[in-house]
Image (cartoon, rainbow, N blue to C red; front, side, top):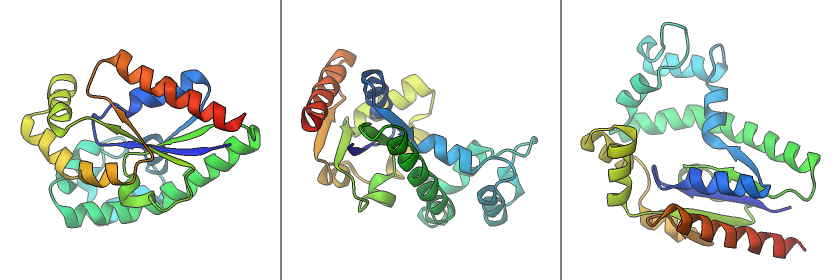
Length: 201
């Protein structure tokens, strides 16, 4: 019943690895989805965000306007830290609840926590394995521009707002190089899955 942290910088291919592990049978818990859930309209977290950053971060339907909030915090370390201090405790509590449920449902499950901010928020948790999806910053910048339609400036700000590649690689038990083809990323992920199942048998 391993608990695995899967992390990587923005546009690093982390979600591709998570999907492949899910296809193999892993229970994948998505930190970004938990963030969205704890920031839902009417939630205490959204109320605190609105108090801290003002009503302009709300869309007309009362939901969080992520683009408006992003424009405030990205590029401003102090504001980003403030946001993280509001969101991370709720995400930690909810993710722990989901881990416990997954292992309660299947004690032999391989549970993968797909988490972009592992270094910043959860590195000291008792993970059985830390997997880092890695592609050089220049590759990730190109993906953000070509696949997500960002300007180069906006893409660079997103990359710069995260910890360095060196910091992520420094905590890795396993590195999956995602700079190549999809089939190469899948092959490395398949090898990881085989290793995990061998450990459990």
